[in-house]
Length: 411
Ligand code: AMP
Image (cartoon, rainbow, N blue to C red; front, side, top):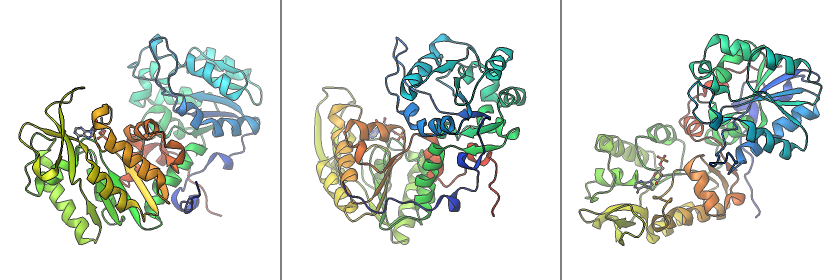
């Protein structure tokens, strides 16, 4: 597919921190914090390795430059204790296959044994440390733990965008002791998510969905004076529709958000932002497979029924609204897409977004999954690898993991 407007703002305008290319890493020990928090099945087989693949450019670069590459990550929630269900051993195996070279695996992430392995490393060698969260100090951002990690290396590189919103030892602690830079994935996430919001090619459309308005307050507030159009679907739409005075049956309504919904709608309209809500929906009396469903307008949701997907008229309306878009940011599904009966709206919007002649950016988490299930991920300009972290960037907030990196000195 031919695309234009695929270039977000120049990186120097949106990231004042060092990036990996600015470090002289030849022959040096480089600690790369990656996000290898991949899903595993009961046999500890990796069911989706996209998180590993997305950080390969940084690892390959470090190897090519002749660095001694020390990789670290968390996996799951072992709560500060060694738990074999959360070992990174399967990641070491997969990495070895993806890199086509040996990956040494350490049984711990700190201590004399690890230091011994590191001291024997040669240029271009790759070592993966065991799960950082096997130590309670990681999530507590313990200074001694951060120091023990920092002791292993000469430089620190953060490529773990998915964990950059967490103030953990391996994210904000190590950079206190080592020169620290962003990896290529981190840089790309910032370029797309922050750069696009700051400097969008217009018309700029935001599509928001998901369960609750309360989860998207910050995003709505940040985008209210930056976008040209806002499309709201998913469960959060019904709080807006209720706030306009309509009955919405048993649809998800956050009573404490009614005032906010009305305020933000008025603000959007006052800013001449075109604001779209679903005009029809798929309703059911329960969220169970096989439950009876009906298609109604959003003004006619009966008592005892709840809206669980947008209907075909809404798909048409939303699709027309994004047709002239040059930039689209999409975060949150249009319905309970995990269930077949309520997935059509989300998948249809995934197709409309991927068909748009625009720079298209999909926020991580559920929307990422929806775009993959719809089979259109290859036609999206950029899919974020972080759920919480991408939301924080869209809220206009600084991520602790980025703030902690070393400032670039302007020439
Ligand atoms: P969020 O994490 O806020 O983006 O919400 C994602 C979740 O919202 C998904 O698991 C969807 O099943 C759910 N969701 C989307 N639309 C609705 C709806 N109309 N009613 C209830 N839940 C919904």
